[in-house]
Image 1: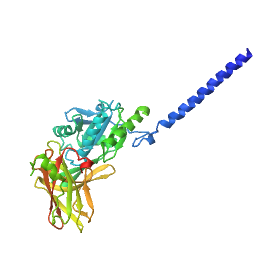
Image 2: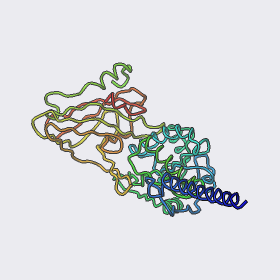
Image 3: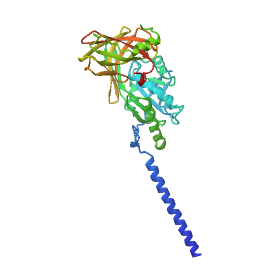
Image 4: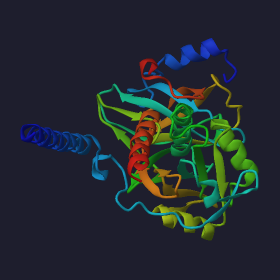
Length: 215
Length: 150
């Protein structure tokens, strides 16, 4: 009887030690395979800025606010339609990237690309609609008066500035990064220019994976 | 000139444009213009400029019969902010080349006088401090040429 009891105790101890050993291995493997924030290139972590309320108007005349960003991934780019080089170049790359991202499980059908014009004086709704529609019918375009635009750009750490060129003409200096906004309205990454489709997709895949696991 | 059939346009775009006197050895190649979205009155042009002469070439202006205004511009990035600036002069040393490409040096072409449909050729004249201007032709494209066709 005593022998059997000792045997049972020994078996129980062996099971406990074995389970602890297995748990230790599992935890160490898990820690080794899940990157921390610093290991994800371009991720704003551990404190990604949370967006504050803003109110723009989209190219159809509807409000474009936090509500249009909530619950979906957004890739946002600032620019203006009189920008001949960096804006069309970036929007063309974004169009190619977003077509690829439609098949991405975290971007899917609800993900969006938003073009925000920092030149409301020249970019009315019809102009914006024609402009972004040329690159992709799925793109959202929006703008607002300067003060309202600055509420958004300040929240994202972006800048824009009017630069006179003589003869009444002007151009706009503007932040040319792509801003990755998570479904819970945090700025989680900024991809710096120049942009390519592959970089845009890779950055999305990396930061969205981290946010989904740890956000 | 602007209504050449597509094949002729493509062939012409592949040919370097140079004459003995044009900017003293400057050769332009791989020229293209990104087709602007509908209603836009400005476009960016890109090309490669090679100095195959014996002396430095100083480009000091561009013009085009197909646009009301043409300038050499450069997009610069300063702390993530894009800044577009007029490039007044550009010097190319003998044997060197300069590539105008998206997101960098480019031709700023405003108020087109022709319809910028795909495959249309437009003329751009490059002025230098010495020699006759170099006439070159850029083909309108919706997307950039692939690296293999540069």
